[in-house]
Image 1 (cartoon, rainbow, N blue to C red):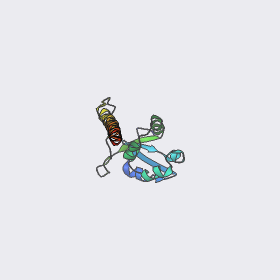
Image 2 (cartoon, rainbow, N blue to C red):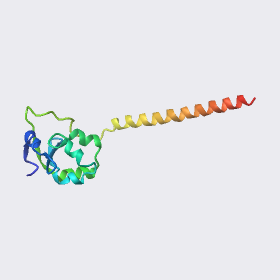
Image 3 (cartoon, rainbow, N blue to C red):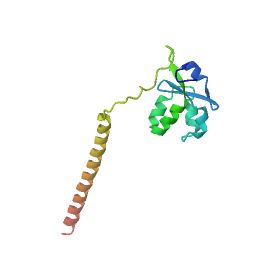
Image 4 (cartoon, rainbow, N blue to C red):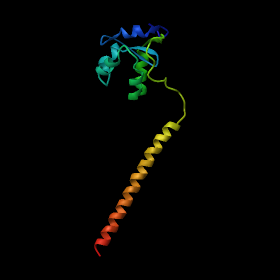
Length: 136
């Protein structure tokens, strides 16, 4: 099969065993049968999402670029969505260079670090103050 092959969700659902395992990630259909034993997270992870849309599970883990290259090698076609098929669980990834979402998460980390550091300094100052007053 080639990447231009249209595969229905019903056809994907028929491939859910260890020896015959299809999964969908971002509306692309992959044959993961040969990769089941090699998957670093164990075969159970793939078998749990076999024959269905694995987009959310794939993206939640935060796979590396190498994992995405391996996935490209397993491509067998694109999903031909029908009206009665389950809706995609997540939106396709965007190639945007917008870092505002990343910087807000980083800002919280730095703010939290500063808060802890400041709290530690105040606690140390209070300790030294109380220690100095108890000696008098």
